[in-house]
Picture 1 (cartoon, one colour):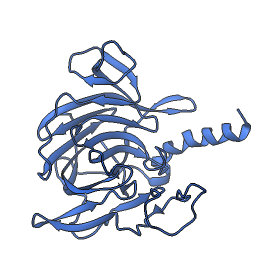
Picture 2 (spheres, one colour; picture 1 turned 90 degrees about the horizontal axis):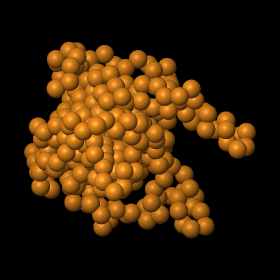
Picture 3 (tube, rainbow, N blue to C red; picture 1 turned 180 degrees about the horizontal axis):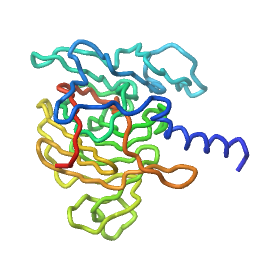
Length: 288
């Protein structure tokens, strides 16, 4: 391996550990009291990040020989209004169009908290997912830099929000978890796993874990999602049903593995129109 590549990889691994130094200590929350993360008027408290647009996106800027955009849109630059505040069903909500992949990220980092929000799907879909199921997600314990995962999201744990898969876990940029789970296909123990309480623990998981059951409501209806995070553990809750419990949350470092217990919250833009409202957070001392 060339020295320059070794240096690049070492620096890439070190960057996520800067969440406390570069962004300060996680924000202190009041125990038992909900704090709103959306004021209903604008995106104060959030920063936007958009990666490289799809080739079909009409934006100025350089393109390569295949017609693909060369540059990321970047931080707090949103020429296509991917992120906006709208009124829907008579109330304010954050609309994420999905046209360009990226994320809406809390400027503050959090630890030991319960996050609660509502979401519903819109109708619009964009390339390369114009004919696929709608997709978004909550990325938690998200640590800089932007774009560490596929050029669009920070290293994080993803609470999947996708039609029919709401509540699944995805590892982004190397986040590692343990969970009680069984192989989706017993003949392929290296494939995906399904979370099953009481099953033997699967350790060091770095891809997808499938929820226990589907509790998502029909498209167009609002869903309530809850995320509980305490130390190296987390719980995914969909419309009042626990669908995933994770433990041992950690991340790779040059010296091995280190606990991943705090970070930002990201709401993904991933090809499908989605609305979020009633986003609030509070400190917790125990998991439900």
